[in-house]
Picture 1: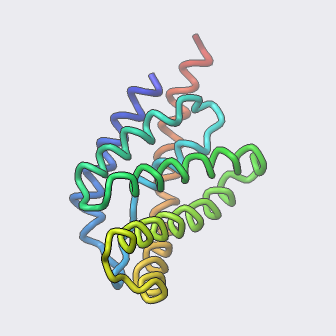
Picture 2: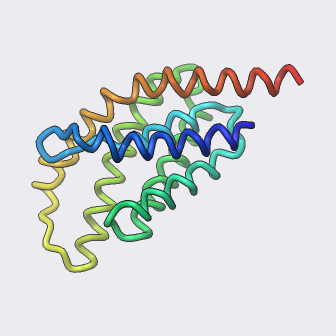
Length: 166
């Protein structure tokens, strides 16, 4: 049941990312609610198959975006692994963990994108892109992560409560 729900949520949040969130830029930065979904979904210890929605989200976003193929997969897998590692260390404070992971994952995601695009020959200045794109994106992701946390936690309570009752 959790795989079905996570797959449906990945599709829904990818559509929401394309239709709504991409129209809300701050300077040159944009929020990535698919990344936020991955972070919040992986915060739950009961989500044992967390890698399946990560792979589905990576495939969808790679297909939709114009970024190189490994960039999206690497950033999403890194965010999921970072979340699972931090959950094992700070399990008493999920909101604090969520904020730290959101900042770190967004920074790493943009750094990966910049480095891969530079490797392919694009002349992207590192410092100006970090200040003009990454910092506003981190700010928007912090704003969007709280509603995402509430939505995903309610959905996970429904799914994993059913699994406990069976």
